[in-house]
Image: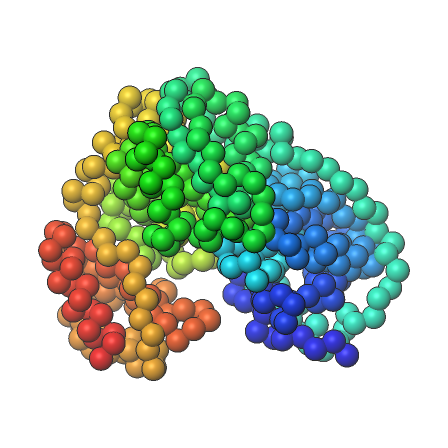
Length: 449
């Protein structure tokens, strides 16, 4: 009986260290269980560039085919291209072998059903876990499902470009950092069709990530693109995470543009195009998001963090756009799925429409909204720490949609527990930079006491 670690089954995917926790036999069984759960007849499978991905993807495909399912192998692609494959072909499901932004020693599988709707711990992953832990998929029937290969990159590029008018995109100098990850596949196909001058950084697919980890949310992983923007005198920099479903921006001064500011700008644009448009944002976000969206005639709706929850809410509300602080951006016309290339195109188009630099577009947000960024604290007792916060700030408006959100007229914060560690994550905003720092330190003192 194969020993399977139940800890690899996460809230949003299946993921673990290779080969100790995650290895081809696990992927083979997951392939069988996934097809069985969906009762799928045809799915798409892709993989990232990690050194373990080809073998793991082959095992997953073997498992799916042994369950009688036909498989479309779309090759080495980003997660957003896998979503496109499932939506474009109206397939019953899809899987991408990736550990996203995790270090090179990790790998995993993200799973979606028809319409690129993700499986999660609450819907699908738990059932797959239970089946594997019970040994239901250990035997190896012969592969009876068909296997075909298809390259969807040109069609994917056209799909992304349909969100903008390329004629409005100006001849800008843009630094692109794909961190040797899958962003290079989509970026090259798309940016070759645009009138921009690109400076490519780390476009060679290399699953050892030799230059820096593929997680631009962390400041140390943005230093190369920041330095290159300044050295080149470029108009902006764009970076992607390892599987290219998240997108990050650096303005012409080399300053990072937080994900909630990008959400505010894109949400505002969609609200202007579609009066009454519903825009989803997460509980960590700056007030810039709801205030900009309302001013543009849209309806901002706050939601708990996580792509599975955002996508579900977007479908329920028929929301036009959604954004998270973490750099995930979601689009109704993209099967409500996140995409790393469409935000880049929309920002470029906006710079062309307005004839302004990104630093000028973002300046009013920086001047009015002073945010802490996410700060992690390791605590002995997560529940007790959250209760202490509610006791300390009992006179505020308090919401418990996702962790604890505390709201005063001139400042607010959210504290959420990590899904995997005894950590609390703080995001705080105040009316001035000085007040933000003072309140930040005060709240951290309560959390860590």
